[in-house]
Image (tube, rainbow, N blue to C red; front, top):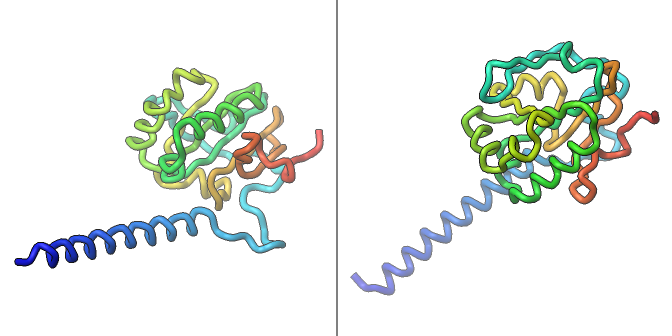
Length: 188
């Protein structure tokens, strides 16, 4: 068989594999970050709404957190799709989480929509426990029930509740300032 023919076939197969991968990634990104038309409803609970009742097991433990245990202190819930976390550079994700954790006196719970095994690997790879200790709690939302309960439609997003369990801020990560979008906040 002619070597140039083999080379052409290999190049054609390689090109089709790369093109398919690009199309798959593009479709994934379009699903994760849909275009919002102006005037459409925002995702997430309404500002000033009460914290919904929920219960979740912390990653790698049998310890449970719930809405009752969080009341009485300011706390932040960060919702992250595992595929988004895996696509970000580790230092970018760490910087964003660090910026959000600094904003809150109470606990911060990172709710990752993905498998517990892959979420554990993410936590280990980023050394989240070393960086944040008990300040950052992690939950693997394998079924997506918490994301549905909080009406998360776009990733990544965060909700900040006050001491009385009322929603004070919500929004998407502002990657430049690592803050929750100010457009979705209740004045103090």
